[in-house]
Every structure is written in C-alpha cells, then in structure tokens.
Length: 105
Image (cartoon, rainbow, N blue to C red; front, top):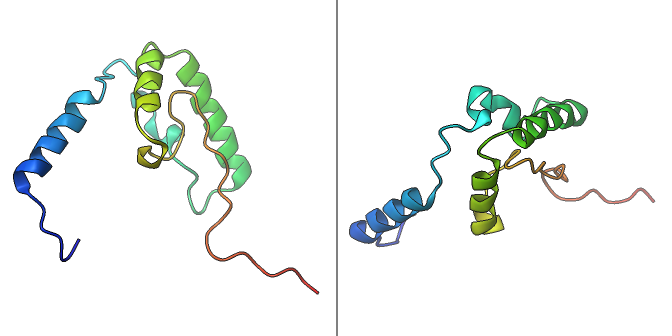
C-alpha cells in the first residue's frame, strides 16, 4: 500500500477490535479437518470440490459451534468473508478467471 500514511495506533485498534469481535470457536468441528472447508483448488475438479464441500457442510450441521459461527458470518460484510465452506454454507462455483470468451460466429 504505497503512498498511504497509515496510523499505527489506528491499525492496532482495528486489529484488536477485529480479534475481539471474532468468536472463540475452540470446539468447532472444522478444526479437526480444515482442508475439507477450503475453497476449490486450482488443480481440483468442480465435482471433487463439490463433494468435499458437501462433506464439510455435513460436519458443520453437527458442530456445537454452528450457531456462533453463523452469527459471526452474518455480522461481517460479504466482501470481508473468506472463501470456502463456513457455517454449513457452500460457496457458489466460481465463474472462472479472466475475460469472457467471444461466442463463435
């Protein structure tokens, strides 16, 4: 972030607030197998990612921390959410990267 003057004290206050507001999900089931919850890998097929995400969501539904996790995710803006399965919510498949292709004439 070149050219920006960031106030170190303001940054510290913001980080403290973010960490303070984040739930302490020490009993969350996702911590036992976190890679299931990750977004689709570049070398992973859409079907494989969908199967993995279904497994992750099933774990979420049985998790004792689901309510706290869901409440937290509902409190943050969509633009600040992480990718992957969170609170039993499966991400929509990506439309891909790059410019759309022209239709063949």
